[in-house]
Image 1: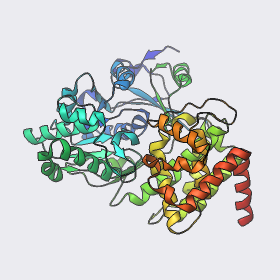
Image 2: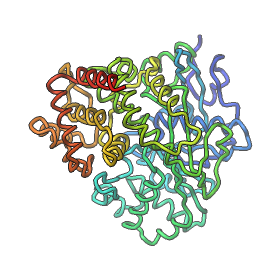
Image 3: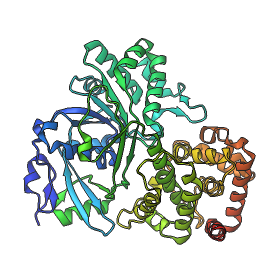
Image 4: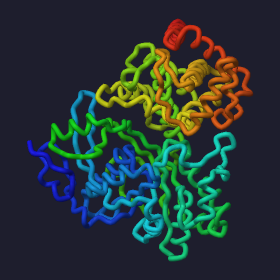
Length: 498
């Protein structure tokens, strides 16, 4: 089999078994600017738009990708070298691989090299939507107060250097100012990050920055920008060297950065697009009046479930999610947590079969072909836990309901934050608060409740005597008996109760 470097010029030379764009990419205009072209975006939004573009009447809805930060240089160089093309490899539960070349990213900009080009692109009259996958930490939110962090040095920099911003808020503000000046019209800003009320959060954070830096723009934004909430879902592990090698061996495609993902996908969006939108319902996107119940379900079941499996699995020495969740102790613990502590707080999910959805989650986590790395799932846990797990704890506490599973997971996270698993092996922790977490975790060795005093994560949760006591007991039990024995005993207790 001959090999072909992935480029526009080589598309027609690819072997059978690989789907390629049948539309003329040269005729596609970028109607969407997307900030944060990582693996998830390329497995999700870009894939949906690629499907849509096969109907040539949608040729105004291509994507201009923006690499916002300096460490995005590699992905920028890769996509630039490959004419924006990449291979999406869907790994089915039975091991079948479905390979498809995605062509919806028709332009790409590297913001650190040319801030002006990015601002002008966002302000271009063709652009009707700006979408974001900037991770939970990218919203500059003070978890303790729920407010915008005006003390962030980069935010201060952006306010003083508007023509050379470093944060998404600096870029958006200058682009919206330019749209106002040039009268290029209204625009929708759509967050695709795993944050409850992501549209509300985006609007609040942006308006907070604008009020600080350019308050005269506030009125225009209120009248000309919409911020729909959305829920996104597709497990997309980090691309491994073996994925690149396997694609080349099986298909002859030399792709420097393919994306692998599961077959399941879901996108639920509130239909509030002030400047028009593509006909995404034709490719399976669900538009609703209120996405809140669906995103609450997803954050509490899937995202929290991932964190539960990742934290417990990491302490027990596992490196991938499928290995951890197929450990009977972890798998049963997860199922009980979802049933007993999360499901009772979910409501208004018309048309959803929660029992089937939870079983689907277990199956997705168990996919041995995905090999989702636990250190990826546990990265930035200090930003994820307040969104995924703590809302469940807080609602359960209001009704004096069960919190034992969440307490054990959070106690395990405190021990995880010391940087070693129970086999005395170092854990690869990636977290903006890593040093703070480590310092608090060391204090917790003397008094577990001190870990809860990290207000940036836990808010005022330490003031709950019920939770603090449950957390401290779980912590001491893990130290005394190990995490596996603790979860096995908890599983046994719940089996007896049932």
